[in-house]
Image (cartoon, rainbow, N blue to C red):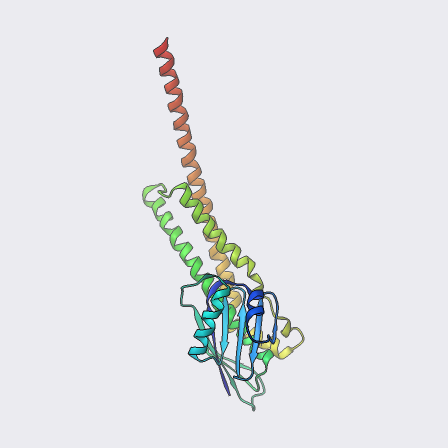
Length: 260
């Protein structure tokens, strides 16, 4: 038996509560931040996360496309990037331990709990990829300003555009902080040693913790650059104000001389 999985980053955010109330299927399990469906009649499984990721299991292209169009009605800011990850679950009844590889995992048997753990980790991996793309864009744009400082000794960016840039950085940072829980171990693994081991192996396979640390490090670099840019802009504004004061004093002196 083989189950084909695919995770997609569809949006920045899903309204899980509204989606659950309007989707015509009974949830197998879920919370305010995620919902898992076991559609046993068609042998399909579905995992939806509020950070904009959907993980499909055994969905054909048409059914997948139809569901994506449906769930976009509950999305905030559709992601236009092609961010996806595929994985497989194979079964071997003679296997006495779980075997995790780059593209697949082999187990003795598949149940809903095991399936959820695998789908969860794929979803986390795609979400991290999305944030990696966002931070790469921020670093690339900050490099442009750093090169400008190096070559010209000044920043051409206006105060308004700098504030917009700061807002974009903080928005990405807050979005990541809000979704920190995606790295938490699910409740399923607490009392099940086999699932706990599977979860740990999958996190290593997808480099979940390492990638998150790298993501946090790169965001810190961007924030440090922002501090530098803000300081440079403040110096520029102070210099401008000083010149305005000097010009006003000069005008006042000229007027006083002219009238006396």
